[in-house]
Image (cartoon, rainbow, N blue to C red):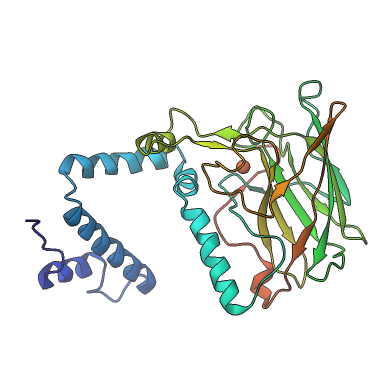
Length: 302
Ligand code: FE
């Protein structure tokens, strides 16, 4: 029979003490969260009879995961980031805040402060000319009635043909494939770019190590990330996932959703894609802002 002690009063009191419940300092919210983590971890250890070797392997894994800056990748791969989207969708449905372009995960590779331009921009620095397929992307930002939203900011970022992102890939120029475009009076944005490649987790990294244990690959389809924002409208975090990619509906990060597939037309060496976004009205000022998640900010010239 399984020995269980975690529900005993003295063990519960011990965890409360460890979570700071016996002092008036610190952060009450954090104390509550940490207590719950301790309680749930103890139950898990008991019920699944986690061995000491398994426990210390997990501790070592967390060290390596953080050391290689892959915690953001693992939460995407394990579907927790997608779960947050599902939860927000369910809360929105309850509140009647529905319609428009679906949200999907941000991922860990946004960098704030990309160059801002009016109406159109070229995203790539030309360094892959001759190898990359030029991509001409355009569309409009609309409200739920289909009326154009002028002055919306389309903040987009994507990988290059090797599946790498500038800033995280130091071989690329500053803000390569990252731009902010302000929509014109018809709500229109235009971008010249290159067709991105899908990409995978580092095969030697801790995220792939976990996925290997689950019998899963770590590949994503080709995609472009977006933040869309405008005064009076709800901030939208989403992605266009490109049609025709073998991983389109087999995305390790669970980001592809109905309504977020971009139809790419490739002809005579160029690719064209049209994609409109529809925003919900903001119910409060906070609705206009993206989440306060910690993000990279490139220092000019660094
Ligand atoms: Fe990405």
